[in-house]
Amino acid sequence: MPQPASQAPIVVQIVGYKNTGKTTLVCRLIEYFKQAGYKVGTIKRDAHEFQIDTPGTDTWKHQEAGADMTAITSATRTAVMKRSPEPLARLIDQLREADVILVEGFKTDDYPKIVMIRSVSDLELLQAVSRPVAAAVWPGALPPDAPSLGVPAIGIDRVDELYSLAVSLAR
Image (cartoon, one colour):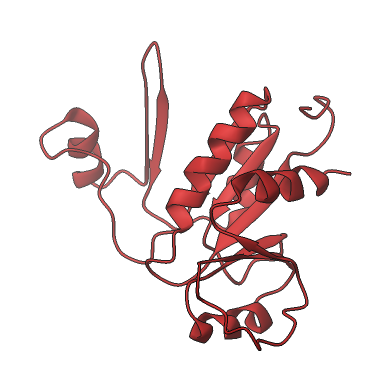
């Protein structure tokens, strides 16, 4: 069930290397949380430059003219663009109205993490990050004689189990 308004949101990071299924898992978890009545926020870390504004629009012109921050709102959505990176904690503060916040990336931050394991070489990430709570494992990623991971190894197709684990973090 969703959190009382006075409680901080559940924050879960989904981390892994490129093309390990992070975005797909985040989208599947969003569906599960929404079906259960949660208000869901998401935050994504992009290692590359990204462009969300279309050249020629008024907000694009504002940014091109040098605005440090640009906000736009309509009857159905709001966006804020800044010319500086934001720490994860500040982004989470901006989404406090959410019951759960799913974070894609930000490997070095200190929130509970589901670590994506697509191949044996991805296992080193489990030791490199803080607070791993589960490994979302691709079929065939682990050899039969693989040592214990120290966290539950859950198949990437078992989103219900990953969802239950995420919900349990609020307790």
